[in-house]
Amino acid sequence: MKIIELDAGNWSTIIDFDDALVARLGSPKYVGYSVDSLIDAMIWGGLNAVEPPYTIRIRNVRQLPKAVLERIELAKHELAEARAEFNRRKGHDVEVLVDLVP
Image 1 (tube, rainbow, N blue to C red):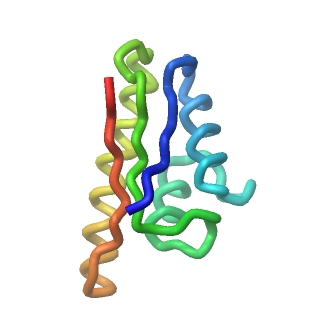
Image 2: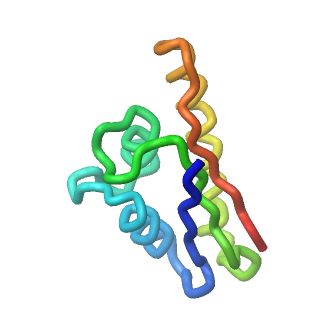
């Protein structure tokens, strides 16, 4: 499985997380920064330069502002729900995971 490393050491806003994720996934500009559009591109595929399976490993999350951590947790939750929906519709899982490292 591919590991996509993100370093949150300098993030102070939600946009910092979104910018880093979009850049590493090679998402087209029209994907946007809403959690829904990011999850759609990651799970349903065909838009990003990087396709599943992969793990997004986010390092240095200990000092992140609460709003950024909440956004990451929301993305993890929505990602799990989207994977379950994909599995129901397609009959197999698509492995996209998020791993937080203090």
